[in-house]
Image (tube, rainbow, N blue to C red; front, side, top):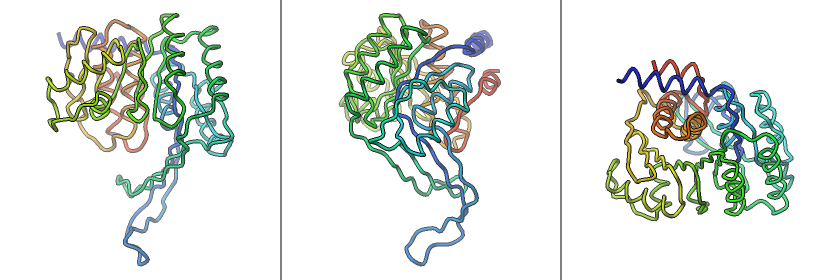
Length: 334
């Protein structure tokens, strides 16, 4: 029985190839300064980092696009970058990953979101964020929506991911307009929500908060128990009623995931992670893998959650913002 399940999951992963996914969300550039610490500064009680190397990679919604491509899919990017060097560097990285960047809009009035991390070995010492989280202008929003509308009318994707990091891109009206357009064409839409921007959307295919986000969105204070089925079910019921979402997938870190079906039934999926070095970007991997699986078979959310769980288990064993490959996922499923 287990062997049959893994064969079925493997076939779904193989069918990721060629799927076209549009990602609309907050784009970021993740930069890393890697170094060694040998002493504390005499000027202040802080470590002195001797730089060994620096690196950068797509982050936020751009990391979702990167993961889509590494899993064999085609990705169309929709979002805002500034008219700065950071924005050009991010676009260059996306183009190198063969992401369609025709949906990007340049907003010269705001910087491209940038997260700078200082690392000593595997330990993160400091993160510096450069960003402007005020809402984008209505003019920029209309330009972005027009690009999304053009894609849906001329080259409809197999699914759409809304990736909200609460950096000013999404308003409830923009997200709902995109969702309504997609639903009219029977295109599944998934959302990675952010409680700092609590949009109330109707008719989502799937929503993927983590545990703390789910409790915040539901307005419920957690008892502190890591896994409490009754408590989780109450949270899920409120979210599904408020947001009118078909499938709700709640990430539970070391407890795995909880998937809630339209009838409210919960399926608990234990974690598959063997080693955890860095959880940065794990949520991006989960929304990527689960959306791709739903693009293959919209009516098998359990398989989508299972595949996403294995994918998360792979990425948390990597250091820094990382993408996983089809080969890694298939090897794990063996």
